[in-house]
Image 1 (cartoon, helix red, strand yellow):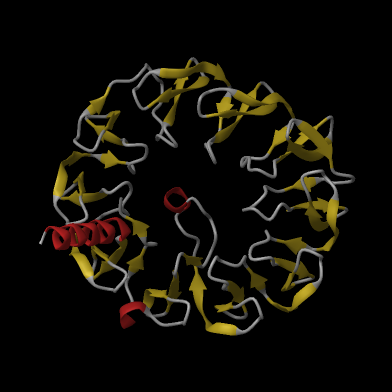
Image 2: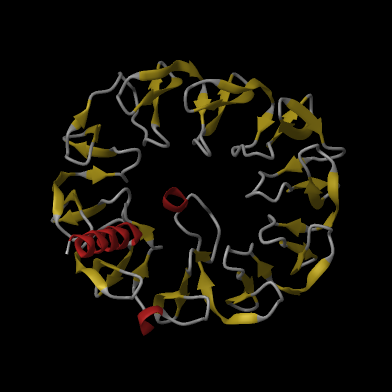
Length: 374
Protein backbone atom coordinates (compact mmCIF):
# COMPACT_ATOMS: atom_id res chain seq x y z
CA UNK A 1 0.00 0.00 0.00
CA UNK A 2 2.83 2.37 0.87
CA UNK A 3 4.56 1.71 -2.48
CA UNK A 4 1.30 2.29 -4.37
CA UNK A 5 0.73 5.55 -2.50
CA UNK A 6 4.26 6.75 -3.33
CA UNK A 7 3.77 5.88 -7.01
CA UNK A 8 0.41 7.66 -7.10
CA UNK A 9 1.82 10.74 -5.41
CA UNK A 10 4.75 10.84 -7.84
CA UNK A 11 2.40 10.46 -10.81
CA UNK A 12 0.19 13.24 -9.47
CA UNK A 13 3.12 15.58 -8.92
CA UNK A 14 4.53 14.81 -12.37
CA UNK A 15 1.17 15.54 -13.98
CA UNK A 16 0.85 18.73 -11.97
CA UNK A 17 4.23 20.07 -12.98
CA UNK A 18 3.75 19.04 -16.61
CA UNK A 19 0.45 20.88 -16.91
CA UNK A 20 0.16 23.52 -19.61
CA UNK A 21 -2.74 25.91 -20.05
CA UNK A 22 -3.69 28.37 -22.77
CA UNK A 23 -5.88 31.44 -22.47
CA UNK A 24 -8.79 31.46 -24.95
CA UNK A 25 -11.86 33.62 -25.52
CA UNK A 26 -15.24 32.18 -26.45
CA UNK A 27 -18.56 34.04 -26.63
CA UNK A 28 -16.84 37.15 -25.32
CA UNK A 29 -15.47 35.55 -22.13
CA UNK A 30 -12.00 34.26 -21.26
CA UNK A 31 -11.14 30.83 -19.91
CA UNK A 32 -8.26 28.33 -20.00
CA UNK A 33 -7.86 25.01 -21.82
CA UNK A 34 -5.37 22.15 -21.47
CA UNK A 35 -3.53 20.35 -24.25
CA UNK A 36 -6.43 17.98 -24.71
CA UNK A 37 -8.57 20.96 -25.70
CA UNK A 38 -10.66 20.66 -22.52
CA UNK A 39 -11.62 23.61 -20.37
CA UNK A 40 -9.80 23.56 -17.04
CA UNK A 41 -11.23 26.98 -16.20
CA UNK A 42 -14.45 27.71 -18.05
CA UNK A 43 -14.91 31.08 -19.81
CA UNK A 44 -16.08 33.52 -17.14
CA UNK A 45 -13.76 36.55 -17.20
CA UNK A 46 -14.29 39.71 -19.24
CA UNK A 47 -10.51 40.20 -19.29
CA UNK A 48 -7.66 37.87 -18.36
CA UNK A 49 -3.98 37.19 -19.02
CA UNK A 50 -1.88 34.08 -19.56
CA UNK A 51 -0.40 32.26 -16.58
CA UNK A 52 3.02 33.26 -15.32
CA UNK A 53 4.75 31.46 -12.44
CA UNK A 54 1.55 29.61 -11.61
CA UNK A 55 -0.82 32.59 -11.46
CA UNK A 56 -2.98 34.39 -14.00
CA UNK A 57 -4.36 37.90 -13.81
CA UNK A 58 -8.12 38.08 -14.26
CA UNK A 59 -10.69 40.83 -14.02
CA UNK A 60 -13.90 40.78 -12.01
CA UNK A 61 -16.00 43.87 -12.56
CA UNK A 62 -13.46 46.63 -13.16
CA UNK A 63 -10.78 45.31 -10.82
CA UNK A 64 -7.95 42.82 -11.30
CA UNK A 65 -6.76 39.96 -9.12
CA UNK A 66 -4.96 36.63 -9.60
CA UNK A 67 -6.26 33.08 -9.92
CA UNK A 68 -4.56 29.68 -9.57
CA UNK A 69 -4.73 26.84 -12.15
CA UNK A 70 -8.02 25.68 -10.63
CA UNK A 71 -9.63 29.06 -11.22
CA UNK A 72 -9.70 30.03 -7.53
CA UNK A 73 -8.84 33.55 -6.47
CA UNK A 74 -5.49 33.57 -4.67
CA UNK A 75 -5.28 37.37 -4.66
CA UNK A 76 -8.61 39.14 -4.50
CA UNK A 77 -9.55 41.50 -7.36
CA UNK A 78 -8.72 44.88 -5.88
CA UNK A 79 -6.25 46.42 -8.34
CA UNK A 80 -6.77 48.85 -11.21
CA UNK A 81 -3.93 47.38 -13.29
CA UNK A 82 -1.63 44.38 -12.93
CA UNK A 83 1.43 42.93 -14.69
CA UNK A 84 2.70 39.34 -14.97
CA UNK A 85 4.45 37.51 -12.14
CA UNK A 86 8.19 37.29 -12.65
CA UNK A 87 10.89 36.32 -10.16
CA UNK A 88 8.15 35.86 -7.57
CA UNK A 89 6.64 39.35 -7.85
CA UNK A 90 4.05 41.21 -9.91
CA UNK A 91 3.59 44.94 -10.37
CA UNK A 92 0.12 46.17 -9.40
CA UNK A 93 -1.59 49.56 -9.44
CA UNK A 94 -3.92 50.62 -6.66
CA UNK A 95 -4.97 54.13 -5.65
CA UNK A 96 -2.71 55.54 -8.39
CA UNK A 97 0.35 53.91 -6.83
CA UNK A 98 2.43 51.09 -8.34
CA UNK A 99 4.09 48.52 -6.09
CA UNK A 100 5.26 44.90 -6.09
CA UNK A 101 3.36 42.05 -4.47
CA UNK A 102 4.28 38.43 -3.90
CA UNK A 103 1.98 35.45 -4.48
CA UNK A 104 0.26 36.04 -1.14
CA UNK A 105 -0.45 39.66 -1.97
CA UNK A 106 2.20 40.99 0.43
CA UNK A 107 3.82 44.26 -0.63
CA UNK A 108 7.58 44.34 -1.24
CA UNK A 109 9.39 47.32 0.28
CA UNK A 110 11.95 48.65 -2.18
CA UNK A 111 14.52 51.37 -2.60
CA UNK A 112 13.10 54.67 -3.82
CA UNK A 113 12.45 54.82 -7.56
CA UNK A 114 10.92 57.37 -9.92
CA UNK A 115 9.44 54.58 -12.03
CA UNK A 116 8.59 50.92 -11.46
CA UNK A 117 9.81 48.18 -13.80
CA UNK A 118 8.93 44.48 -14.00
CA UNK A 119 11.29 42.01 -12.35
CA UNK A 120 13.25 39.93 -14.84
CA UNK A 121 15.65 37.13 -13.97
CA UNK A 122 15.75 38.14 -10.30
CA UNK A 123 16.32 41.87 -10.76
CA UNK A 124 14.30 45.01 -11.50
CA UNK A 125 15.39 48.44 -12.65
CA UNK A 126 15.17 51.54 -10.49
CA UNK A 127 15.40 55.13 -11.68
CA UNK A 128 16.70 58.02 -9.60
CA UNK A 129 17.63 61.46 -10.98
CA UNK A 130 17.30 60.10 -14.52
CA UNK A 131 19.90 57.40 -13.84
CA UNK A 132 19.18 53.66 -13.87
CA UNK A 133 20.30 50.93 -11.44
CA UNK A 134 19.00 47.52 -10.34
CA UNK A 135 17.47 45.98 -7.23
CA UNK A 136 17.07 42.35 -6.16
CA UNK A 137 13.99 40.44 -5.05
CA UNK A 138 14.68 41.56 -1.46
CA UNK A 139 14.04 45.14 -2.60
CA UNK A 140 17.64 46.19 -1.88
CA UNK A 141 19.99 47.90 -4.33
CA UNK A 142 22.35 45.62 -6.26
CA UNK A 143 23.67 48.34 -8.55
CA UNK A 144 23.37 52.02 -7.75
CA UNK A 145 21.71 54.14 -10.47
CA UNK A 146 24.73 55.12 -12.56
CA UNK A 147 23.66 54.30 -16.12
CA UNK A 148 21.69 56.41 -18.57
CA UNK A 149 19.97 53.31 -19.92
CA UNK A 150 19.67 49.60 -19.10
CA UNK A 151 17.86 47.39 -21.58
CA UNK A 152 16.02 44.11 -20.96
CA UNK A 153 17.98 41.28 -19.32
CA UNK A 154 18.49 38.32 -21.66
CA UNK A 155 20.41 35.20 -20.69
CA UNK A 156 21.32 36.94 -17.44
CA UNK A 157 22.85 39.98 -19.19
CA UNK A 158 21.69 43.44 -20.24
CA UNK A 159 23.14 46.11 -22.51
CA UNK A 160 23.81 49.40 -20.73
CA UNK A 161 24.62 52.92 -21.83
CA UNK A 162 26.70 55.72 -20.33
CA UNK A 163 26.60 58.85 -22.43
CA UNK A 164 26.97 57.74 -26.04
CA UNK A 165 28.70 54.41 -25.39
CA UNK A 166 27.37 50.93 -24.67
CA UNK A 167 28.55 47.87 -22.78
CA UNK A 168 26.97 44.97 -20.91
CA UNK A 169 26.37 43.94 -17.30
CA UNK A 170 25.21 40.72 -15.65
CA UNK A 171 22.37 40.48 -13.14
CA UNK A 172 24.79 40.96 -10.25
CA UNK A 173 25.55 44.41 -11.62
CA UNK A 174 29.06 43.48 -12.76
CA UNK A 175 30.34 44.90 -16.04
CA UNK A 176 31.10 41.99 -18.37
CA UNK A 177 31.70 44.03 -21.55
CA UNK A 178 33.39 47.44 -21.14
CA UNK A 179 31.36 50.58 -21.86
CA UNK A 180 33.23 51.47 -25.03
CA UNK A 181 31.04 50.52 -27.99
CA UNK A 182 29.00 52.77 -30.28
CA UNK A 183 26.47 49.93 -30.69
CA UNK A 184 26.04 46.54 -29.09
CA UNK A 185 23.64 43.63 -29.52
CA UNK A 186 21.07 42.83 -26.86
CA UNK A 187 21.63 39.06 -26.50
CA UNK A 188 24.97 37.67 -25.33
CA UNK A 189 25.44 33.91 -25.69
CA UNK A 190 28.36 31.50 -25.93
CA UNK A 191 29.09 32.67 -29.48
CA UNK A 192 29.38 36.29 -28.35
CA UNK A 193 27.49 39.43 -29.28
CA UNK A 194 27.93 41.96 -32.05
CA UNK A 195 29.28 45.46 -31.42
CA UNK A 196 30.46 48.56 -33.21
CA UNK A 197 33.70 50.27 -32.28
CA UNK A 198 35.70 52.92 -34.09
CA UNK A 199 33.08 52.91 -36.83
CA UNK A 200 33.53 49.17 -37.55
CA UNK A 201 31.19 46.28 -36.77
CA UNK A 202 32.51 43.10 -35.22
CA UNK A 203 31.86 40.25 -32.80
CA UNK A 204 32.73 40.59 -29.13
CA UNK A 205 33.81 37.14 -27.99
CA UNK A 206 35.98 35.97 -25.06
CA UNK A 207 37.20 39.49 -24.39
CA UNK A 208 38.19 40.23 -27.99
CA UNK A 209 36.59 42.48 -30.59
CA UNK A 210 36.77 40.69 -33.94
CA UNK A 211 36.11 43.08 -36.81
CA UNK A 212 33.88 41.92 -39.69
CA UNK A 213 35.32 43.04 -42.98
CA UNK A 214 32.96 45.46 -44.78
CA UNK A 215 29.91 44.89 -42.53
CA UNK A 216 27.46 47.77 -42.12
CA UNK A 217 24.90 45.89 -39.99
CA UNK A 218 24.95 42.77 -37.81
CA UNK A 219 22.23 40.81 -36.00
CA UNK A 220 22.18 38.83 -32.75
CA UNK A 221 23.30 35.19 -32.52
CA UNK A 222 20.42 32.75 -32.27
CA UNK A 223 20.55 29.43 -30.42
CA UNK A 224 23.75 27.40 -30.66
CA UNK A 225 24.44 27.51 -34.40
CA UNK A 226 27.61 29.58 -33.91
CA UNK A 227 26.68 31.79 -36.87
CA UNK A 228 24.87 35.08 -37.10
CA UNK A 229 24.00 37.17 -40.10
CA UNK A 230 25.52 40.43 -41.28
CA UNK A 231 25.14 42.83 -44.20
CA UNK A 232 27.74 44.11 -46.63
CA UNK A 233 27.05 46.23 -49.71
CA UNK A 234 23.28 45.65 -49.31
CA UNK A 235 23.72 41.85 -49.31
CA UNK A 236 23.58 39.52 -46.31
CA UNK A 237 25.57 36.47 -45.31
CA UNK A 238 26.75 34.75 -42.13
CA UNK A 239 29.73 35.32 -39.85
CA UNK A 240 31.25 33.32 -36.98
CA UNK A 241 32.55 34.37 -33.57
CA UNK A 242 35.91 35.34 -35.08
CA UNK A 243 34.19 37.86 -37.35
CA UNK A 244 34.95 35.77 -40.44
CA UNK A 245 32.47 35.47 -43.31
CA UNK A 246 31.40 31.82 -43.07
CA UNK A 247 28.81 32.30 -45.83
CA UNK A 248 29.48 35.08 -48.32
CA UNK A 249 27.00 38.00 -48.35
CA UNK A 250 25.10 37.16 -51.54
CA UNK A 251 21.51 37.07 -50.30
CA UNK A 252 19.00 39.91 -50.14
CA UNK A 253 17.67 38.78 -46.77
CA UNK A 254 18.27 35.93 -44.35
CA UNK A 255 17.12 34.76 -40.94
CA UNK A 256 18.79 32.68 -38.25
CA UNK A 257 19.94 29.07 -38.49
CA UNK A 258 17.89 26.42 -36.70
CA UNK A 259 18.00 22.66 -37.29
CA UNK A 260 20.93 23.30 -39.62
CA UNK A 261 18.89 25.43 -42.04
CA UNK A 262 18.30 29.16 -42.44
CA UNK A 263 15.69 31.06 -44.46
CA UNK A 264 17.26 33.09 -47.25
CA UNK A 265 15.85 35.32 -49.96
CA UNK A 266 16.94 36.32 -53.43
CA UNK A 267 14.76 39.04 -54.79
CA UNK A 268 11.30 38.48 -53.35
CA UNK A 269 11.53 34.69 -53.16
CA UNK A 270 12.52 32.75 -50.05
CA UNK A 271 14.07 29.31 -49.63
CA UNK A 272 16.48 27.62 -47.21
CA UNK A 273 20.25 27.16 -47.13
CA UNK A 274 22.55 24.94 -45.05
CA UNK A 275 25.62 26.05 -43.07
CA UNK A 276 27.77 25.76 -46.20
CA UNK A 277 25.56 28.27 -47.97
CA UNK A 278 24.13 25.61 -50.28
CA UNK A 279 20.48 25.84 -51.36
CA UNK A 280 18.54 22.98 -49.76
CA UNK A 281 14.97 24.16 -50.38
CA UNK A 282 14.50 26.23 -53.54
CA UNK A 283 13.54 29.90 -53.54
CA UNK A 284 9.79 29.69 -54.03
CA UNK A 285 7.98 31.30 -51.09
CA UNK A 286 6.80 34.85 -50.45
CA UNK A 287 8.22 34.62 -46.93
CA UNK A 288 9.79 32.03 -44.63
CA UNK A 289 10.57 31.71 -40.93
CA UNK A 290 13.07 29.61 -38.98
CA UNK A 291 12.54 25.93 -38.15
CA UNK A 292 11.16 25.02 -34.76
CA UNK A 293 12.62 22.24 -32.62
CA UNK A 294 10.08 19.79 -34.09
CA UNK A 295 11.51 20.32 -37.59
CA UNK A 296 8.66 22.41 -39.02
CA UNK A 297 8.88 25.95 -40.36
CA UNK A 298 6.23 28.45 -41.50
CA UNK A 299 6.34 29.42 -45.17
CA UNK A 300 4.09 31.80 -47.04
CA UNK A 301 2.40 31.31 -50.38
CA UNK A 302 -0.77 33.38 -50.35
CA UNK A 303 -1.22 32.36 -46.72
CA UNK A 304 1.02 30.50 -44.30
CA UNK A 305 1.62 26.77 -44.00
CA UNK A 306 4.37 24.56 -42.57
CA UNK A 307 7.08 22.50 -44.26
CA UNK A 308 9.53 19.94 -42.90
CA UNK A 309 13.31 20.08 -43.43
CA UNK A 310 12.92 18.23 -46.76
CA UNK A 311 10.54 20.90 -48.07
CA UNK A 312 7.40 18.78 -47.83
CA UNK A 313 4.24 20.77 -47.03
CA UNK A 314 2.92 19.26 -43.78
CA UNK A 315 0.26 21.85 -42.92
CA UNK A 316 -1.36 23.45 -45.99
CA UNK A 317 -0.77 27.14 -46.64
CA UNK A 318 -4.23 28.28 -45.54
CA UNK A 319 -3.59 30.21 -42.33
CA UNK A 320 -2.13 33.29 -40.71
CA UNK A 321 0.59 32.89 -38.09
CA UNK A 322 1.54 34.92 -35.10
CA UNK A 323 4.57 35.36 -32.90
CA UNK A 324 4.51 33.80 -29.45
CA UNK A 325 4.64 35.79 -26.24
CA UNK A 326 8.34 36.48 -25.89
CA UNK A 327 8.00 37.49 -22.26
CA UNK A 328 6.59 34.10 -21.30
CA UNK A 329 8.36 31.79 -23.70
CA UNK A 330 11.71 33.44 -23.91
CA UNK A 331 11.52 33.11 -27.61
CA UNK A 332 10.21 35.15 -30.47
CA UNK A 333 9.78 32.52 -33.15
CA UNK A 334 6.65 32.43 -35.22
CA UNK A 335 4.72 29.21 -35.60
CA UNK A 336 5.38 26.24 -33.33
CA UNK A 337 6.13 26.81 -29.66
CA UNK A 338 6.66 23.36 -28.25
CA UNK A 339 4.38 20.81 -29.92
CA UNK A 340 1.60 23.19 -30.96
CA UNK A 341 1.29 26.16 -33.29
CA UNK A 342 -1.30 28.90 -32.88
CA UNK A 343 -2.92 29.67 -36.24
CA UNK A 344 -5.71 31.89 -37.49
CA UNK A 345 -8.37 31.20 -40.10
CA UNK A 346 -11.63 32.85 -41.04
CA UNK A 347 -13.19 30.75 -38.28
CA UNK A 348 -10.93 32.19 -35.57
CA UNK A 349 -7.84 31.02 -33.70
CA UNK A 350 -6.87 27.39 -33.16
CA UNK A 351 -3.99 25.12 -32.18
CA UNK A 352 -2.40 22.62 -34.56
CA UNK A 353 -0.05 19.73 -33.84
CA UNK A 354 2.80 18.60 -36.08
CA UNK A 355 0.45 16.32 -38.01
CA UNK A 356 -1.72 19.28 -38.98
CA UNK A 357 -4.58 18.25 -36.68
CA UNK A 358 -6.71 20.97 -35.07
CA UNK A 359 -6.77 20.62 -31.29
CA UNK A 360 -10.26 19.69 -30.14
CA UNK A 361 -11.45 20.44 -33.67
CA UNK A 362 -12.30 23.87 -32.30
CA UNK A 363 -11.72 27.54 -33.12
CA UNK A 364 -11.73 30.43 -30.63
CA UNK A 365 -12.25 34.19 -30.82
CA UNK A 366 -8.79 34.64 -29.30
CA UNK A 367 -6.09 32.23 -28.20
CA UNK A 368 -2.71 32.74 -26.54
CA UNK A 369 0.19 30.24 -26.50
CA UNK A 370 0.27 27.41 -23.96
CA UNK A 371 2.21 28.15 -20.79
CA UNK A 372 3.84 25.69 -18.39
CA UNK A 373 2.27 25.85 -14.95
CA UNK A 374 4.89 25.73 -12.20
